[in-house]
Amino acid sequence: MLRAIFNCIRYSDKVLWTIIILISMYSLLLVKSISRESFNYFTVQFISVIIGLLGAYFLQMIDYKVLAEWWKWIAVVCVGLIFCTLFAGIKIEGSMGVNARAWIALPGGITFQPSELVKIGFILTFSKHLSEVKKSSEFKCLKEVVGLGIHALVPVILTHLQGDDGAAIIFLCIALVMVFMAGLPLRYFLFIAVLGAIAAPLMWKLVLADYQKKRILTQLNPEADPLNMGYQQIQSKLSIGSGGVFGYGLFKGLRVANGVVPIQESDFIFSAAGEELGFIGCLVLLLLLLAFIFRVGYIAWCSGESIGMCICFGFIGLVMSQTIFNLGMCLSLLPVMGVTLPFISVGGSSAACLYLGVGIVQSVYLNRDQTKRILNIERYQ
Image (cartoon, rainbow, N blue to C red):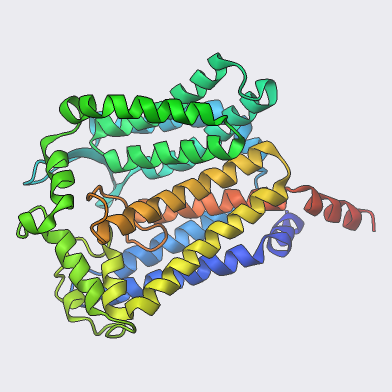
């Protein structure tokens, strides 16, 4: 047991650990600044990071292929969590028509968002399914491709029913990145694009709630409703722009201290980075996330095995899509949809579960052929 723990420390990807620790330190400093005049979000984030890192460390000791073999149980648990949330979750209603039931109350006044854990579970189950389809038919069997589509749509539909369309979009992005990197023929993507274009008017009329339609319309011209729907994005852009090149400095941003941007600790934390750390600070943040994405891509390439590659690309799809949508919200390029900035935003469920994904990626790295050869050589020395 001790030898296995030592080997995990010795042979895990030190570069990936370094990047994730730097991202965590960046997040904690930013959250500490946000917390100076308001609720102590720093404590929440610090506890989440520690729990996440410990979970990632222990999870990397489990062979990802063993985890993938448990896909049926993982799928049952994930669907069960969403259904529990649908029927027994905390309902949040906003003055602008928001109506979501995406959290579960835990003892001690703690809330948990199951969809964050389900994202990691979905990456595992979809990786197993995708690798099996690729191995058996190389996407030549239409029935199996349709099966993949149904698999992908299950969490999308369930999270939509929760009222959490931000999570639904992220699930869809994860699936699209995974099937694209697995080599799904482009004709299927063309079919999806055409189908989406045809379905868009129906979705606008039958699926989207009134407040979601208002968000989309307001995003096109936030100044048309500056004190209501457009307020958050207008103030976010003002905060980001006010920081200039170098920003006002950590713990010195007046708009951050006064909480001018609503939900700046979570969905709009990028606005706090822009004000206090300026263009340089925002660039460093994005470079760290980009370095993380490229390193996970390198691990996918090193794995040399279908399931491992799918897991890595699924996690890339998760981090990349959340980053793009979050920045789009903060810069008023996309409608507000409740998507956090990965590893940076405050959110116990999101932060802790993302680190579990890091642990599985480390498992892919530890179980690659090169590591196994090294361990076998040491075993016989």
